[in-house]
Length: 112
Image: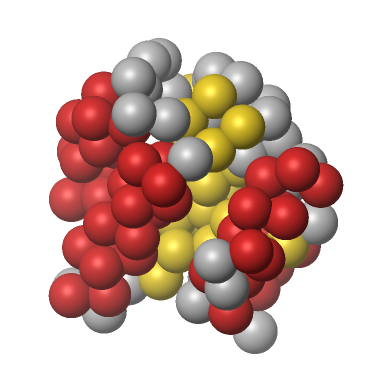
């Protein structure tokens, strides 16, 4: 999984490349995101290309959130399709994560 990483000031914006984050791809995602989580404390995950997520993918995002929280960092999500958002809502993870409509809104949220 080739992650695209953009830096906006001190915020790392990571674009997930695939349409699915599931049992087949979540371990690879965790391995690929690990260096980003080590180097940054402010991370935005742009999920605009993601169309399906299962419990393994949700667990991978929780792992990212925990790793950042342990060092005083923050994770924000943006660009969720309605299907992906419904999955977050179903398991009430929309209450755990800071979710924004756009990358700009998510980055701006770090400033306020």
